[in-house]
Image 1: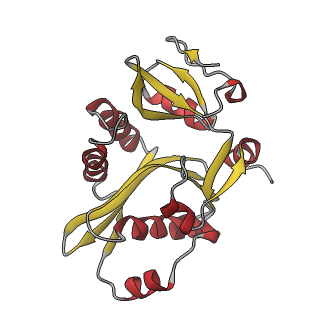
Image 2: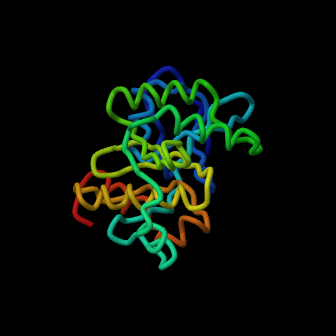
Image 3: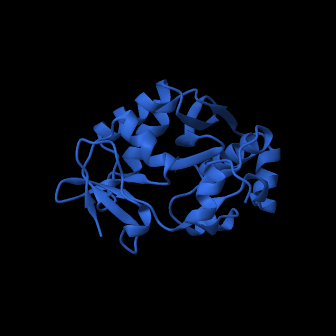
Length: 215
């Protein structure tokens, strides 16, 4: 069942959604609605159906635990060369706009100005963060997402040179491991993310970790 949202700040029980995780349409990208969504394992998808925003909550969650991040031998060799610099929150807008440009031509999914503005607000309010990868002072890769408690919910990443997004993800995992972070929510499985340690957990397990309960 897919619910149509109203102005009221409420989401349905994710267990009532469609098999692909779609649970609701409509609503807005206000800070309050986005934080309520993420706090319940729900995320917006930058696509529309009948001009309505889509909200998803898969009951099988693809995540990476920071301590399980897989760094291949070739990636370790690349990192040792120190060819790239990694920063945190130095250029959030640069990261999200690069992600948007690279996704613009993907059918049904792109980051419009409304999305950019919404997540930039979240960033200014301390909820969204970016990891940037630089080569000789040029932004060549990165990722951004939302932090809820001990969990980083990844929204998008980009690479202008080979492996830049992997470097950003490794930096994110190491930062979380060093600072009490417990989980990276990947939202969707990709071969790239699986190769770096991604695996599925149930929605109930996900919510226990998100709420900092013992699991």
